Length: 358
Length: 212
Image (cartoon, rainbow over all chains, first blue to last red; front, side):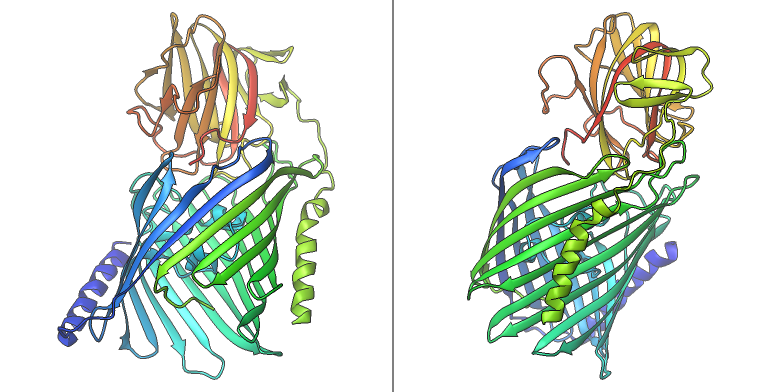
């Protein structure tokens, strides 16, 4: 795996040398935005958790600009509360170029891995308030963020195809309070995406994803997933929106049986009035390989239903109300409502926000 | 668009019925053979003839495996509330996120020296240094509330006094802020206890008290 790290370093040197030959003195065009995400809960009915007080879940500052005619740069920092105190952390610091190779964009630096749907979208841009369990469990509460080298190729074909191949440092994956350890196999991932138009002025984007890694304890993780996004517009309004992901995770620790887990969410949303949308998200999650210490299989499933109302007076502000019911079933227990709560969210953006993914 | 709308609604209904569809009872087998229950947790003796199970307690010297999983996923967290008593120089080891033979996990060893209760992390033949849990009288029944966050590396352990009012922000031990910490993560999702002249009287599982 030293070879991969050397490849990362060599790539960085190559990009620097290639760019330095074509750099000019003029690198204007800085765009900046600030995004604030405020959330709160009430009327919580749960055996295990209490309601979250209203808090600034995220405050993000983002800069993007051409560095020179060849390279573009980004810098994003975000504050999140931890232990009652907001801590700033680096979300994104990348150098990229779409001019080095034909039909190819190369991205190097720190950022969210270009995999899945939610993992590629900033938290304040999610179409719902809280992430589904499949995302928080397989990725993290916000997403997998790492030092990465990524290449995306858009094929000049009639059927648009976009291939992404990436490798990330992988010393940590998901939630961590330390710098982690050098993995045996770094995080590597790929995504194949396409798009086609649907009758009635609609469009459908769909993609297949794969991610793998082997950590320093020889624990091997594989993720395989599909994501789809569908939209229909009537005039300027988004008449119907559908977003869904399904993922399978396989985790193999040395000397123990492999753990297979499946999770998915489906979120259809309808436009009710000019600025009001109504959606209802359904989530499902199950550990397929669950068994007790005697080897008896344990049937298990958790699901969540989240009706959501969104008021969006402009692209710069969003007001959202949702109610979440979490259902659980395990072994011989009957299905029960494990948790229910009212959720609220306000987000606003100052400045110039980059264009959103489809 | 109508077709996709119908698909979306049907998908929601299917997903909402997902637990019901999976709720047929698993084949039940007696799960307290060669052991006994402590509260609702069923334990099985692991080749430990010097261990006795009676009246909702486990007493003596030996190892007992909890039949149910500690957690559904290995990379997750769980809280274990325990009550136990120790003879002088006795110990109780919580074996968490381990294999079914209780190896390969995050082991938390609680030992009595007079009235002091000391905590060590054990992994195989390796033991961490000991930390005294201040304010605990080991000569009487001890109640502890233990968070094991096995989704971090090394596993993140918090221990609170289970007697009196629970104070989330003042644990007896937070391995993240302490020199005494486990050396890694547990490799599977089972758990149990190893007793040495000890008596376990309570074992209750719940979600972690400390959210990360």
